Amino acid sequence: QVQLVESGGGLVQAGGSLRLSCAASGRTFSSYTMAWFRQAPGKERQFVGFIRWSAGTTYYEESVKGRFTISRDNAKNTVYLQMNSLKPEDTAVYYCAADSRGYGTTDRSRYDYWGQGTQVTVSS
Image (cartoon, rainbow, N blue to C red; front, side):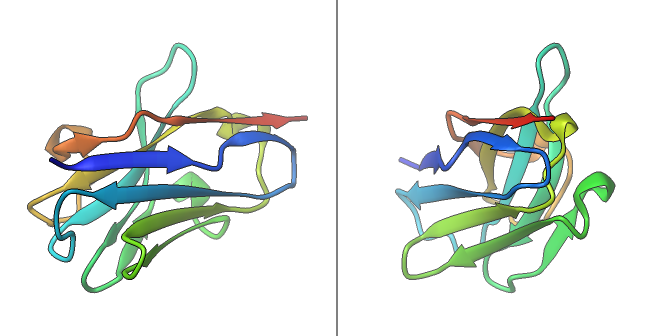
């Protein structure tokens, strides 16, 4: 079965950086699209960005463009979210998700598998 395990969250000051990891197991992910979402307290889960595993192409939500970068390591079956110039409004639980159809979408209902989430807190 597919398992996604996030790590790397923590507390950071505004302007700082964090790198989140999502270790994927249970399948061959070359045809998948992998995404990051986030959920702040009292808010809906929001799309952050995705990467098409085979092509490596990425797409980002407007507010994180130029600050966040998604990449993947084929050998480690791991997807990363590098977050720079962090802002207090980036504070949320960050989730990794996998879409077996591989289309690439911002719609969270299209994603089949989810990790447990990792907390990111940015202090001002």
